[in-house]
Image 1 (cartoon, rainbow, N blue to C red):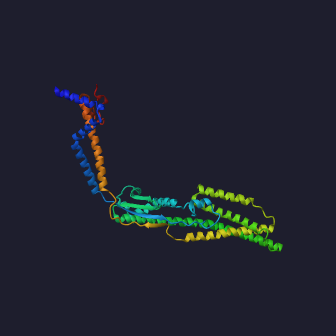
Image 2: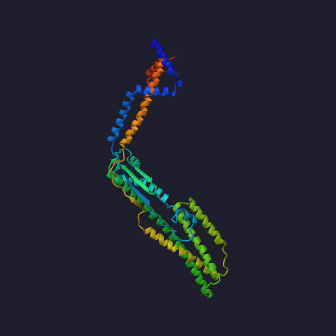
Image 3: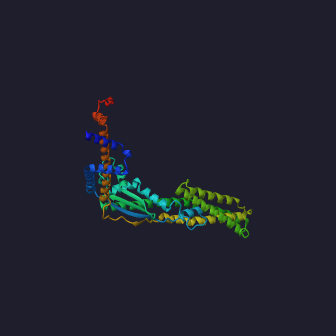
Length: 407
């Protein structure tokens, strides 16, 4: 009788946990841990041991890295006057669209392209290495990308890292990525240089034809008039006019190259087009020279100024097209790693210990809560438990929902 009274008192005191002090709550927490200490210790030990053993027996993965930097690109407009101030400010004198950030982005796009990935796969027979049977091309590329990292360094370079179970193969794959990057990027630059050369070459041919036409008109006028034109008073004005037309020709060439390199929707292309419109507006406002002889001489001078700009630019594009230099600077080639990169046994074991401890505590407190609930309303709890067991949590066929216990 006394035991029943004591048990009822303990149950009532436990049921009124809201009135427990902080010390009592801590003591209750420690008592639960003490009560289930054997389960907690054994559960954590077994899970941690299994995780550590799995990490030890897992295949060792090695990481090998190579670091590359973009080669400083020469600009077709470098050294020329009257170039867009915006282009100079944004690119430091280099052709817009070939800055460091854009170069790195292009490198990453090349390295992740299907053509490069397939060449790496074929070179190292990765479908067999990764033991892929179904959808070999698609799954092998995904596996290769999962084992490869492309990271931009703080110094502005690109680090190419490859994970593999073979340390030698990991270094060879990283270096092969670098070789493929150099090869593909060099071909892209050569194609771009050839496109620029063909564009400027057409402009040079047009300029030559215009110059020859102006010279023929001047010669014909001199033969008909019987006098040689030696402008004096209008010479300075003609030269200023010729400079404006030369500036216009430069801006037209610049706009054409920018459109081919960046596309017509690029803000820098729009800015250059606005500058060309402003130059054309000023040219249209220049006074016309009324004397026919001076007008003919002016046309010759203008075309000569334009050719003085186009010929050196054309020669530079020919040099750029024929130049065979590496497109990337290899700062560090990948070396065979001496130590494995993963799995990290200590870290893996530590995480397993922490997670298993959390799971064990959760299980312990759930069981304790169910045990106390059962002690408070034993009959009701047994009815609910019987209903759940009767149809296996609702998965057993042929059981009706009205089998649930009633009050």
